[in-house]
Image (cartoon, rainbow, N blue to C red; front, side, top):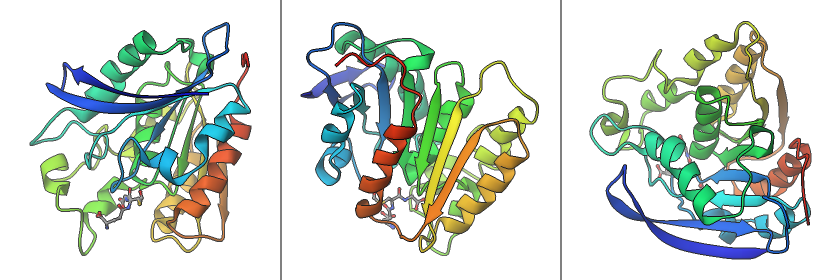
Length: 248
Ligand SMILES: N[C@@H](CCC(=O)N[C@@H](CSC=O)C(=O)NCC(=O)O)C(=O)O
């Protein structure tokens, strides 16, 4: 795999950002692509530093694009930059220009951990025509509850102002769009460890998803909020993804 770290200018954010990607260098056709999202305290280097994602992705001939969004919860901030617009509008265009990746929905996937699990499900549920599948590992899936914590992230009011309840940033509100079968609906994979503080929110999300027409593969097991579990579970995600056109 080729590993590419690049710096580019985001027109939406009006700032220079970095991006990490791993791309099959011997593929003769555009590669399937996994957008892989980081957690609250991480950046675009985290998946490569703390997991063996490059080794795992190579087995599937899939490119992996790892952006950075700071501590934004992948959201257009009430008092700050439009990180969701960057993610969902600009990042795919830039990635398709820079890397030999497929633009087909059936070849496009998104996954993430913690804040990134929230970002992955939000992106896939808001733009279902873009993705074949999405995965959340230890996802921070109840964004309303994040604001009700004893010590919410200090940025929370800047991101969500009063409350994201019922908005397009609320995954439970987005789920309601899928109460009946939709023309486009990504397959979902969700994992959370039972010792994780985010486990109850994950259970609530999978219960709410059961009330929809979405196909959700829900997994739980021993574990808390640590890379040793995400390194293991991302292998499971790659195996689960419906990758149809690898060319390695
Ligand atoms: N409380 C701290 C650190 C917690 C944190 O950053 N958790 C991450 C994942 S850990 C590694 O990436 C996260 O995304 N949490 C989301 C959440 O809603 O808790 C802090 O606030 O920095």
